[in-house]
Amino acid sequence: MKDYTFHYGRGEKTFSVDESRIIKEIRMPEKTPLTDIPAAVLEAIRNPIGCPPLDKTVKPGDTVTFICNDPTRVANSFDFMPVLLNELNRLGVPDENVQVVFSLGSHRLMTHEEMVEGISAEVAGRVKMFNSDCSIPEDFEYFGTTSRFTPVLINKLISNSDHIILTGTIVHHYFSGYGGGRKAVLPGCAAMETIRHNHSFMMDPNAGLGATTGNPVYEDQMEGVKLWSDAMKKRGHNVFLFNAILDAEHRFLKMFAGDYVEAHKEACKFVDEVYGVPIEKKADVVIVSCGGLSEGYQRIPDAENNGQLRTCRTRRRCSCSSCRL
Image 1 (cartoon, rainbow, N blue to C red):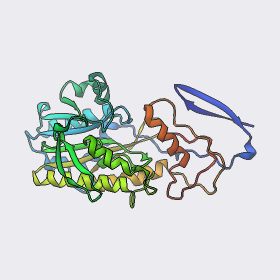
Image 2 (tube, rainbow, N blue to C red):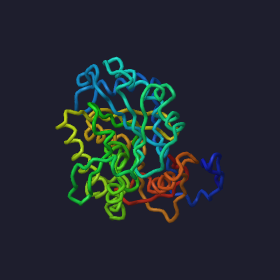
Image 3 (cartoon, rainbow, N blue to C red):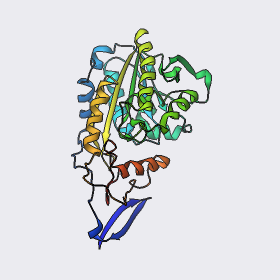
Image 4 (cartoon, rainbow, N blue to C red):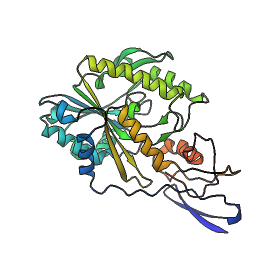
């Protein structure tokens, strides 16, 4: 018998399994975490993927909207937001021209205290902060309808600034393919009807973890956000992405910035490296951990993600003893 220990709740659970019945122990590949977070943030935004850097597009006196994650996603926004805000100041954007909109999707509203905790007291004390409340119809602007008949209703708060910066972290998503990128806008800052219609595709057999091409949820989101971003370009607004990848201990591994499509595609390749482990054989039983108590309901699909071990393209599962987020 061999003992195994998993994170469980706020503690751990230890159990024993007959070693002869274990096909394989699956662990995340080892990646060295970043040690200089501010330097990594600046390196990413000054060398973006697929678009000019902010110092080429931001002008003194411009207005900026940041889209930030709510507490259901671990983003460590409190680490990178001070760096981003200070960089905007350096480029001539005063704090009073900056606002943060929290992309709640259909989740509950955040309290002021949660907002402060999310982006740091330093940033919260300098900028305006808002929830995107999907239940208030008059807060949203219509940008068209996707080919799958999803009405694209996006919060006005993110649609009227010179620069809209999408932030967050990326992991595999159990029916949208991947988090991050376009999800900051749809579903993050979309109206309830938009979210409801888009998420109705989650039962489609092509909707799944790590799936993009042919995934109706992902493709509908991409199409909807393109309608919005095209409208932003016509208004002279700039859409910019800043996404990071964390390890199992929520330490930064790598940061990506630039065009919200191209930079996100590159980041997803890295996500596959970090969270993807090939398996050779199916198992009758998979033992997984969702990594302990951290993100509330989101840990339920995370446990399913771990059971699939980021190998959804093969639809294989393994006898897992130690995978976790």
